[in-house]
Amino acid sequence: MPVKIHPFISKNKGIGFMLLSSLCFALMSAMAQNMSKHFPSVELVLFRNAVGLPFLIVSLWQKPAIQSGGKLGFLIFRGLLGAFTLYCLFYALEHLGLSLTNTYGQAFPLFIAIFTFIWIPTESLKSKQVLFLLMGFMGILLIFQPSADKHWQNHSVGLLYAIGTALGYMAIKEAQKYYDSRWVIFSFMAAGFTASCISLILGTWGNLPNSFWSGQWVNPQGTQYIEIIIMGLLALGVQSFTTQALRFEKTSIVGAVGNSAVLFSILIEIILGHGLPDLTVMIGMALVFIGSYQISKK
Image (cartoon, rainbow, N blue to C red; front, top):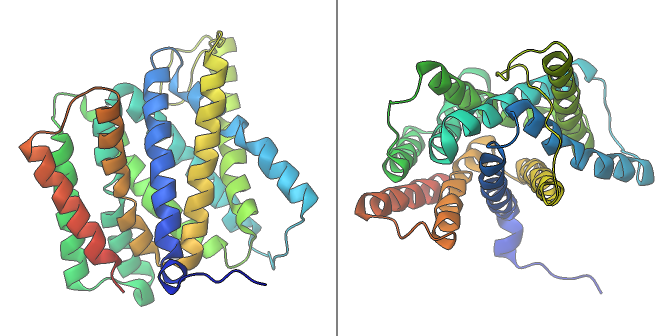
């Protein structure tokens, strides 16, 4: 007898998948930020993809994809865009820290709104929805209270991370029309793995300094191997749940619900003993909740 799914759950599957993705992302970011004290950012990109790739390969081998295909160039573009976004993410985590990186990262719904207005008129947001997106972003600024004491180049990487994330969400939505979700994820991870290998080879053998594009290999020690595996599995969860969310929901709504990653990050910091948020942060959290809820209403 088939299992009946409650209408509320069935109607909001996309939002549910995105909440799971946001939780995985918050946990992964916290781990990556801590690991950046020991490893260059490009090596973290390698770890992030190396763990998940075997799972995808086995899945595709056991259950071959059924898809129309025909858009290989677009799939490759999606992979390269994803790799670049990963470089931005881990570089920002290393140089800006967890809070500032999340601040910039959660700005991507604003760019989605702009890009959808330009390229996908059928998914354009109403003026009221744009207002709630702005409300959510203002809440994020209040939560993390970003400062301008970091180098402007690092802040530029943070903005590029937000823009790349927005374009990535839209590219996933389009690629799923032609390819199995697993191939979309594979293109992202394979490109990131290949690019990070090249960066580490250039950095290690070419004796280049650790930078956005290059890094010198550092051998993991002891329990760091366990941390690498956990971070990689969380990253696979982020990509898998996000891809599933975009199957069932509009790009703009999925992006707005992604703001919940900020709230999960706050919860993680509380659990780690960093204390309760102050009044300003509480107001920011309320704005994020209101903005994300309103933008998600059908």
